[in-house]
Image 1: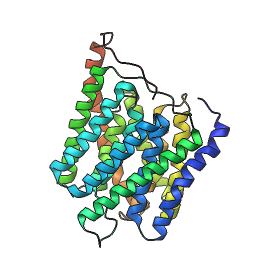
Image 2: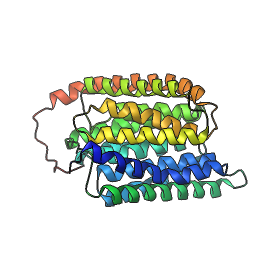
Image 3: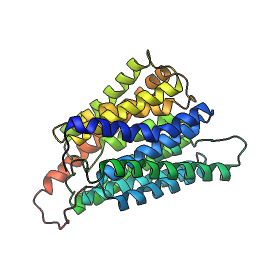
Image 4: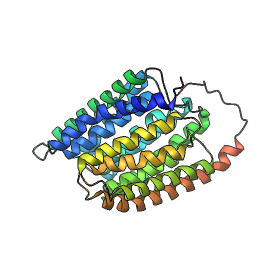
Amino acid sequence: MAMSLKKSIPLILMVMAVPAIPAVLFVLLGWGEASGIWMLGTVTGALAVLSSTVRLSVYTVILLAIASTLAVLNQGNPWGSMLIMGVCAGISGIASIRGLVSAVNFFAISVAFFVAQPPVVSTSLSTVQDALVVGFIALCAGFWGLTITNKVFHKIHFPPAAPLEARHARLMAIILALLVGGTAWVVADRNLGHGGAWLMMTILIVVQPGISSTFKRSVQRAIGTVAGFGIAIVLSAFVSTPIAEILVGVVLLGVSLLVKMDSRRAYWQYVVFLTPGVVLVVASSGDEGSLLQLAISRLGFTIIGSFIGLITVALLLPYYRNSVGKPDSVPASRA
């Protein structure tokens, strides 16, 4: 169902503002890590329900809660990190069989932040207790985001993505599992922290089977990601407090949703607003210095991730071209 831009703006503001209220309260209480977990969970739930059904969104949120709990229990173990991210990335790839990669891709991105630097909600908690709290916050945030979004938008969804042929989806699932899983191993082994999360996030954005299998479109997505960091660097001169970072981040995330709802807009335009939105949300925890320091330090990882993703897509192009027109039964489905 389509909706005019004029009518969409107040709804987007409502969808983003209401879920952000708990995040602001967490910051005021000094629980910066809880704020970051909440916002990642909220956006995961919102994007899932806007890209698919409520039922699939519920599954996605439950997977996020389980994966975030396991990420904290894993505590940076390289092999465990590889397994967790490999499975999450593989799920994102295989979902493209029914054109549902948009519904689960941000789930994998959120898990990347938990795996790269497991959050510590309170130093007074044991590892097991902290893991359960992180999982519970992610679960509540995900359900909060999908419930508010579903109530406001009802049957309004993002433009559906075309289903990917089964052979292509299986290949992409394997490639993403190996590529992102291997990257997670390096991130944990080298203790790269959130920088490693940006590396995995960029790969997941650039190598996105459900959006486009062409090198040209992948280049556009990479450019949008890098440009998004440029916006974050500029904003660092004006945004300096955690609450301001959350509020501006929410606005940018809202704009990204508006762009994605317009089928006439290119995917890079969605990414160019999504990226600084996530940067500001993560920066609001205050664990990695100022917004400027965060944006500059993560830009390098983003460029590296873009190159890895582009090389991967370029290597896969001959396979896609050679298999065009070959029979493969894949039921069409609305994303």
